[in-house]
Image (cartoon, rainbow, N blue to C red; front, side, top):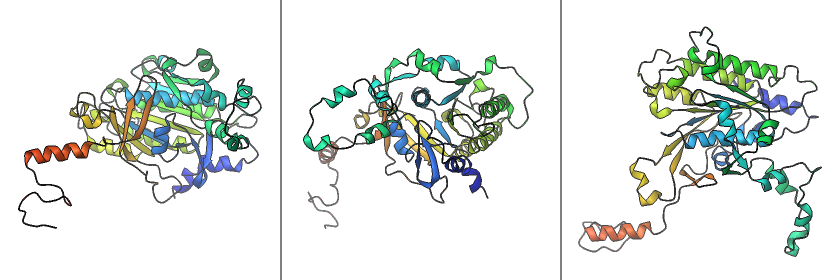
Length: 382
């Protein structure tokens, strides 16, 4: 009985056949409208991107540095795609967080522009001498693919004019009026009411959408469950508001299913005392990933992980409009942070590891691996 609810935003989009494609989105299999998370590696891990109408949960690393980067990528992708932004945070002022968004690479943004307004350096590209077998190939494939997902430079901040061109909404609890809280939602009652107001007022739920250009609302909710939100799940195994976060996520998913919205929620999972609460939070999300940082751990000095800064664990993959989840091709994922880029890729071990281990094992007199030549009397020879 819950399947029609999941199809609501996507099926309504497909019925509007005469309307233009929403910027920064594409139609994928199973009649789903998908947008990019801003991180190509995360899009691949989730099966191609974030489905509009879904909720992605990010389990924060201990210092909340890498999870914050993913949230910045998510919001920066919304700015470049022309989506509306909604950012809620109890730690930092949301307006200050938006000012720190990374700058998109200009070449990538130029390629993502519409065909009616080609970039200024098109003539230069035409005059370049390339191999004759590539001259007659159509160049529309590169232009269309660049509209979905962009690259960003972490060493530069986004231009102020780009930030002013996008419509954004913020929620900062210290500046909000403290109305009477309901018993079920606790400290998140005001946040849910604010999200409902924005979705209805801007027409993301389909109300009064005639004559309006269809768009996507990106919801970024930072560090829900922390003590700064007034929640006690992070410092008590039997919290008084143990059901507040789960009830909020349940209500949020209902809003997402019935609107052109997508949400990224970060949670300090390592601080939640009751793991049963964390399990329910993960189950109430459409997709969930966890960031494990190598900072202040034994793996930081381990030569096996010298090229990476942490691991990415896939807790849950989305299974919308299908009976079975689309399992990723590889679950051994790691991330690394460079000066200009944060990347997620497959975890690869050093190629000379086997030789090093074999030399060490022989020096210690350990038995060789199966298939190798025996060095002494063994009870069983192959």
